[in-house]
Length: 617
Image (tube, rainbow, N blue to C red; front, side, top):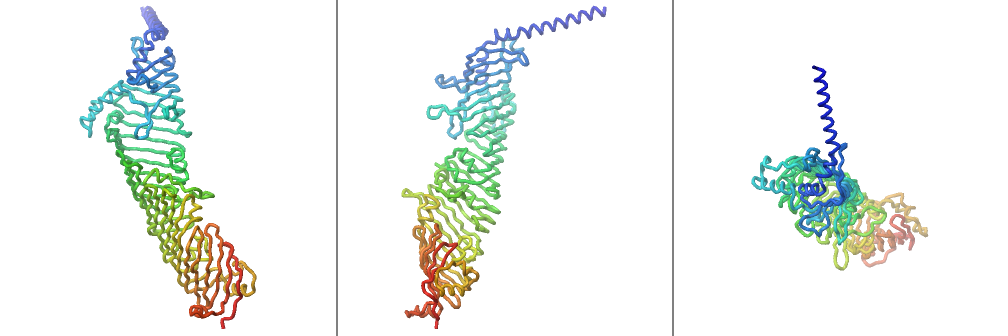
């Protein structure tokens, strides 16, 4: 009896195995006869909302998974038969349900697009997006969800959301193209990734990589309530964009309604702002920015406006805090706000946000005006410590403004050279040409420190004084500002010394005759009671109207010209005893102690005596 049961069991198992084998063997035949090309196209159309056409005959594979391989597949808009397809794919692999295929149905959960071409269009906001389908399960689910959201925007009933399945869409080695000027232009290449959305009422993720403008990029987007987001409701959203020139991330809530907004934490960083401008093709010359930048901020973005609160910004590793406001409602974007730094490189700041500073190359080159054409700027900034090239500043209060071709950077207050400075750099683009104006007022400063920073250690007394500089001229290039500037320079100093001047040795050399270098008599200092300088500047050349220094025994004077750009000198000068100066003031001619000519350059002047010294008796 047991043996009979065993034999019957073996026969039953063998029969089941035989049936399964026959079914598996017949499955490709059944699929190829019942799941025809039009049936697959219809199901894909109902799923996507696009008109799907399959030129090649489907090929059915059973192992390792049951799937249909389609070739020359296109997805087009139903409403515009003349328009090119929204998606073209050389090959589409669809994972099918074997049981549904035996019933004559098509059910699939995963579609793989191999070498697809996705056609996108530029939106009014400037983004490139594919056309939206006019029907299909996705569109109907979004319409249903929109009704749920509108019924209670603050807290929609998520249980009423459609639960239709979506599945996974994978894409490999694709590209995005857009019609620009009547020609297809490739926007993105080497596009690969996948979108996972199991059901309409579940979470969704999108991961993609590609090459954009020659750089590899990676994008990750996720939301636990994507259907609510597409329906115009509010839902959590995370976004991450990574590329070599820049990275950006957002984590917060968003709404894609007519009154779209974003609210959350955003981060942006770039190792070189200049490279970002080149890569993004923002229309701003790359010379307008140098150095790295990173921003972390709480943002609130609505239509036409983005507010940055508790903003942490680092410019060339100079950290700061503040608040910014970006308005997009006018013809040009408007950036306004306040920033406070502990330390700040003013050269980097100017180069990053305005066209007012050279980039630090071997040659300053042309001044860039494109920034003033692209954005309006109104920033207030402060810094506990700042640098402007070799100049050290403290307690800086400044503004940067750019609007309608006018760019201004003002330092309203700062400590430097032991005193206080105020400075203004103004760039004004006019029809007759660009004009640049530079103003500097340095009060109660250490003249020695100021002269060292200005490269005029021999001409500026080591004493407390006040310096005023006003320059104005055409500004096509940075060199041309100083080559063609007009303006004035004035300075007054109190008691101090003239450094690197051994006056007895100087007088001895002038008595001996023959020219000599000022370095030959630089091993001493001359105490003075005060000094005054006045000069007018024409086309970059300073004409000394008055340059006098008074000591207890002597009065020194100079007159002549000095070139700022060439650093050349052409002075006549003299050394007079005080009683002789009084005699000359009364119209009486007294003997001059010494008169001489000064030539050479600021750093290497030489002296040529005109007359030898005479006794004051």
